[in-house]
Length: 93
Ligand code: FES
Image 1 (cartoon, protein in one colour):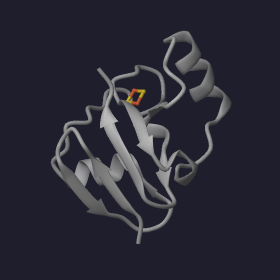
Image 2 (cartoon, rainbow, N blue to C red):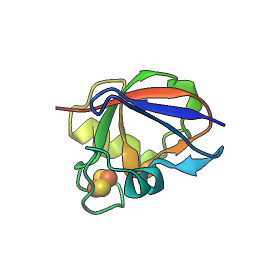
Image 3 (cartoon, rainbow, N blue to C red):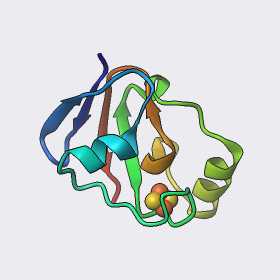
């Protein structure tokens, strides 16, 4: 079972393979915030510190949005991510 560690919250949560990060955050008290839930507002931006290969690949819409926001290479939108293996993330500032 993949482990999601959120350094911002000092928390590690087990999730099923291919589990949407947004569902995990709704079920546990995390400091990742959500707005549109559709990849359009940037409220849920996270930094992937380890295991970026264990997150579902970025779709064009997410890539375009992150480019517009001048996001760093390791930033993702949590509402667009499914977890396939162990990852370590933090909330983007
Ligand atoms: S909640 Fe708006 S981009 Fe993820």
